[in-house]
Amino acid sequence: MDRIARSVESRDYSVREVSERSASPLRRVLFRPTLKNIFSLASPEERAICSDDGTGHSLDTIELSNVLQTAVEVLDQPLDLLGMDACLMSNLEVAYQAQPYVRYVVASEENEPNDGWPYDAVLKKLVNEPGLAASELAAHIVTAYISSYVERNYTGPVTQSALDLSSINALTSPLDNLAEALINHMSEASREIWIAQRNSARFWHNTLWDIAHFSEELEKLATDEAVRAAAQGVQEALKPGSDSFVIAESHNGDKVKRCGGVTVYLLPPLMDISRYYADLSYAQNHRWLEMLHAYHAA
Image (cartoon, rainbow, N blue to C red; front, side):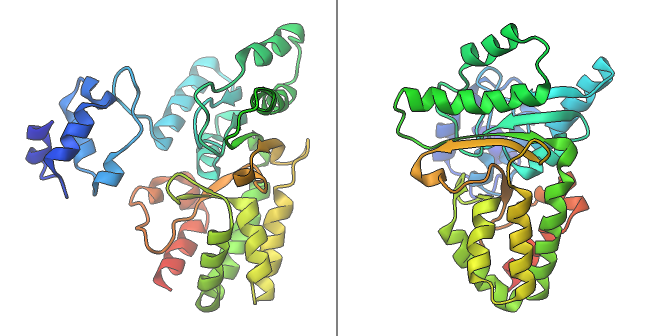
């Protein structure tokens, strides 16, 4: 690893970093180009990527959509339900990347506890009701997941959401309206965004913010009527229901008590916007990245 890191002139590299990576699952990486790609990232923080415990390889958001596309081509139909028993995956950017290939997603905004999903409760429902609609199974998983931690008196925060990806535009459109309103009033709005961020639920080193909670806090602070109205529209779009984008949502714990089920990338100005964010379909097709650049510039 040390030779590979030095060969690509890894930025801010130190022997301590390679010692830590050698003790991690990355020690099992088989292919030199994988390590070169990792050590070529801009900083040690960006290089600390999620890796598979068995192989050391990672799966990013775009690769996930490529895998889903291949699965759909093999099956000749979309996946009914993508269950993501993983951390931080109830995220707008992930859902948007998956939506051409998947009908429903069930995932968590927060880091999941090590026990993950209660598969006995999830699969028992499906065995007993094999004709269960995918939407009903998705909603059941949300309830079963939270109940499994409440019943064992787990004290940490837990979240779970079921999303109908056919209705994703019901959220992206109001978010575009909010982005536009913020861009048009960024000289005043930048401070309001910053305070709203500090007052609302966030995850993974202050990179992902709960959209509903952030919009609620922003509405309280906004001095511009267009920003207030757009923030209200986003909250309305996130209300759970059988015909909504969020068909079911549940949570437990003080940290997440005002969460609405979905996060978005909302990096504070003191951090650099990821150079990879612009590669995502959501960033390319909507106005959130434009708003982020305006926010950071202000």
